Image (cartoon, rainbow, N blue to C red; front, side):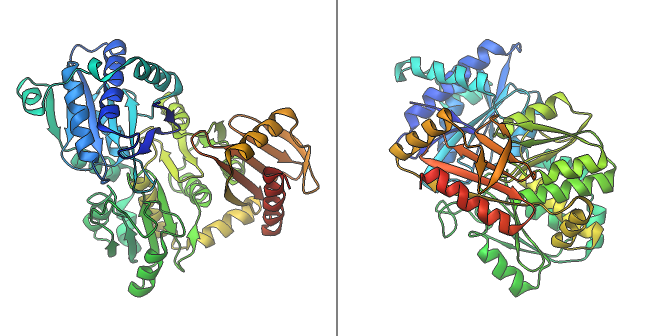
Length: 475
């Protein structure tokens, strides 16, 4: 069964993510576009990442779109997710299909669909597509081969890179970056940011060293192009060897970021979103709306409150943050989620790891301070806030037991801390009397439970993790 998660449909290559299923999903998307778009000649951007078979899936998808009378605008090379989002909006296309499994392991692939507004499809859209998929068979597929599609005007090969690079140059202060005069280490994790993030830095005359800027369908040592602490150990070694003052990285489709401070310390996404909010307020004087997902740090709230900005809390999934940006274009400041997604005013309603990395470079250049020093400055203003996330893999029986336990009676205290408020926007978020909190969220696609904790000291974080683990495992 084809099911869309928080960011598209994903599956294991040659198991459930097959050529036949790709054709079925594209047929369902084609029918959705033909039904909902007012345009006479409809068009859909088709992109792909560096994974095994991604380019072939994109070609198959283009054949089905063309067979349904929709012009396929097929990217000439692997393309970052935010670039496809930008190109949908720039061309006023009817949507975009991107073949990527983002930061997932090498044996996965995926399909992301973005409607005409450029952000990830909302539930009402993906539910309609899923329903169509259930009714379709391989005999229902309409398709024509690529050469015929091109001759008939239903296929065009495009290069969205130049226009996107121009957009980023409008959003980032490259003059400040040039004056920074420090060396940056860049890990592209064998993903789509090659020719984008590295090129922008080189064009700005930034001294940088690049690693993993080639295609490797097996990805780094862990087999997953995720810019987390573990996968960026090689970046730390490169920083040390080349005397770099900052390490930056993007995931497989360049929508997430990973950052190492001047001493090689991994700075988690919660902290990066917070320091960039602080930087945008100070450097641009922006006021307005800050959007964050429910399990993202409240340090953002404290900064927003200090400077008179409004916070909007969303369910997990960047589509909800993108929806806010789309509706509040003029007043939107920044949107972020703890898993490493971020966008800002004037940009796409989609997360962009390339932009996030460059904003960090800008911030360091302008402030001439390490990220930890900027965090310390923020703590002096609003008080310290620390956060962590731990994943637990449970058996299907254990998952069912936990679901029932949460439904029947949610706890009124953890580790002696009384629950002041319960938020059930997406999962269970327990706010305590001292404003620390604990979140529990069950994955909808695998037997994984995510535990989120936040407090004003690392000792409290440790105690909350222990209490959360006991509750989840029933010990």
